[in-house]
Image 1: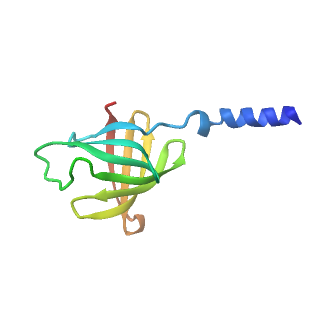
Image 2: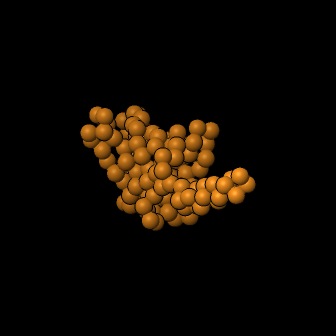
Image 3: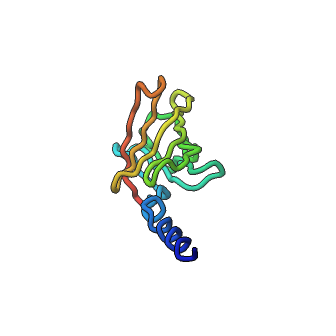
Length: 124
């Protein structure tokens, strides 16, 4: 019985989800260089706050705005939650996926029929 329990615990510890779970935390820069977002734990999962924006950006976003919220882990490398668009004041369902050294954010409308993907690079 002890051997079975020990093997089960070892298998869980070595499982890909546990051993290779990706870390979303840190600061990421959008591929066009217009914005930087820092992801960190928050009360309802993981949140992403805007920490820097190019001065000439016409976005209505302000430093400190939470633009990604309620992100809950779906797989070892993806989270599902919401993205806020300060330009239209709406919040959309979305996913965040780590793909190698890149972060892919995807927000969708109309039940997932129209989606937009952004690519981010970790800067720290």
